[in-house]
Length: 231
Ligand code: B12
Image (cartoon, protein in one colour):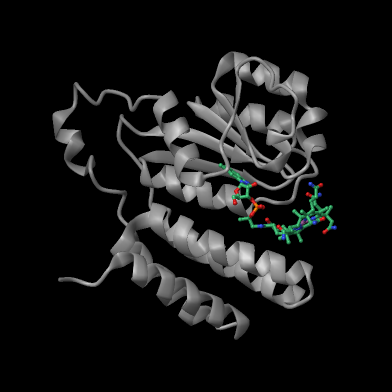
């Protein structure tokens, strides 16, 4: 019998947390790349990266870890995610724009979500934190994007943007996520609130926009059951 992958991920989580306390970036990177290669993006994000992010966030808030750990973990995770982002090409690739609305700085869960969409063969274009709504609209038009996902912790991040969201929702599927999105009494027409669970949310976005040309392109389906290569 081979090793139990769930035990391995539990161990990886503990070791990533320990390396974070030590500010040991090389070990964090090695552990995460190993987990990604062995267990894939979904499992590594939901079972290792998110729990560590939560633990560091909570510990930072309560003063058990310093601001240094919060900055370190953000930067280390972004570095590893960057290494994953090999270009997704081919006619069946879909394009998603990710962004946080103006004045919203909590972008890390959204970046992790991007990695999960990338693994589902989406070309992910990330505008990051504090993105003007005009820039988000411009990016979706320029890229002929298939979907846009916005995330925010505070309800005000979305509340002040309802007309822009509704306008955007008339031209492509718009998804909003995070505590701020869930706190809206009612999202505008054309805008869907995603569940907290990143895997479930990735399923919702993935199902909303079927991959193009799949039936017509049997040769291009060689990668179908796999994720884009990890660099
Ligand atoms: C790290 C952090 C920051 C970092 C952000 C780093 C980054 N680049 O993301 C920095 C330092 C920038 C920051 C700044 C601020 N923050 Co802050 N921050 C946190 C902290 C400690 C952790 C957040 C985190 O990443 N958690 C880990 C993730 C995994 O969990 P989560 O955020 O709960 O997300 C879950 C779901 O909401 C969902 N989800 C979230 N995003 C997305 C996206 C998608 C696509 C999907 C599908 C799901 C999803 O996934 C998770 C499921 O478990 C929290 C407190 C805490 N302990 O959580 C405060 C917190 C979020 N911050 C808060 C505040 C108020 C601020 C500040 C205004 C000032 C301050 N007091 O610190 C500023 C400015 C914020 C701004 N203008 O946007 C408040 C928000 C309260 C509110 N609802 O209004 C919190 C809750 C702290 C508190 N208790 O007051 N912050």
